[in-house]
Image 1: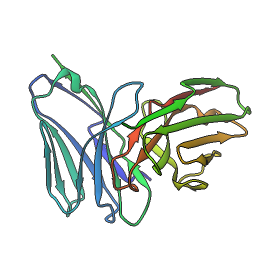
Image 2: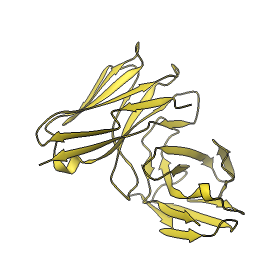
Image 3: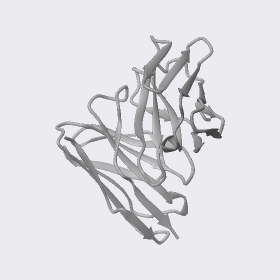
Length: 112
Length: 113
């Protein structure tokens, strides 16, 4: 059972465009949602995170939009750069458990 | 600054052989520690977490075990490898429990033949 799903599986955009990565979850107890960026052969690194009390979190070119009612969130990457080409994972956890569930991932390719 | 080191970088092992992977965190006392497994091209599966020395909690059963012999060290092991154990093993740490940034190590790539 995959509790955190991401779409699309892969995405290609041109440099300068906005990339939109989607994430949905099933467990209504989840209240913390970090997004991780992973380059091939490396460990993931935190990009940006949001808590369920907020509906938007912005950090430079990266913005998370969160819809608690629909159990959906999205990561918007504006002015995409070739260096943004990586796999992005949405993750989820809740305050009453020590477990983290990672999504299926979206592979982003930014063409120059 | 905190650093996380994993060893070995890569391993090729035979089915049925034992395995021991290590992880060390420097520059942070009493970190929360985690082991993850990632299949090639796949998502990350949390395997274990540890809040303190000597205490390890299992998240999923994959015929693996973990131990925390020191505050800064986390060990992943098995006595008998399976083909399904192949993949990328990642160690991570955080200051607080799961609702906090997890800092991942460089990983160990394991191929079981």
